[in-house]
Image 1: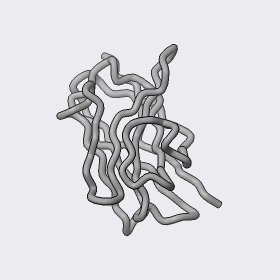
Image 2: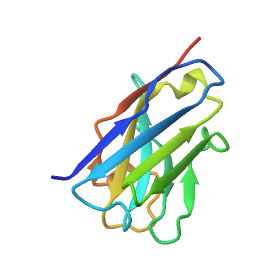
Image 3: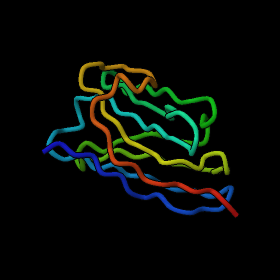
Image 4: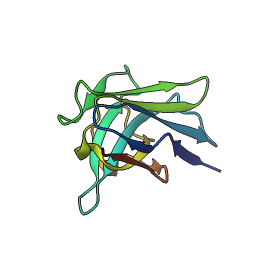
Length: 125
């Protein structure tokens, strides 16, 4: 059974850090491109960061560049999103995603086929 399970969300103060994890089961992460998306209340889903399966190149949204880092550990079949210097506008449900057929996708949600259930991040003082 294919599954992506996120964890690591929570309440954090502005300027703080969180690391989100996404464990894959039922398939290996190694051959596939990965990404993180987020959706804030009342807003459309937004691409945060993605990593190519071909060369490991990373594309990040302008709002998170220099603050968020995507990575994966193939041995643990887990992907991560390291989030630093968090801002209230980063508050959202964060989703991990995997692209099966596109080796170097961009941050377009239709390119991704497997999705996690989401983990809530709240940035507030």
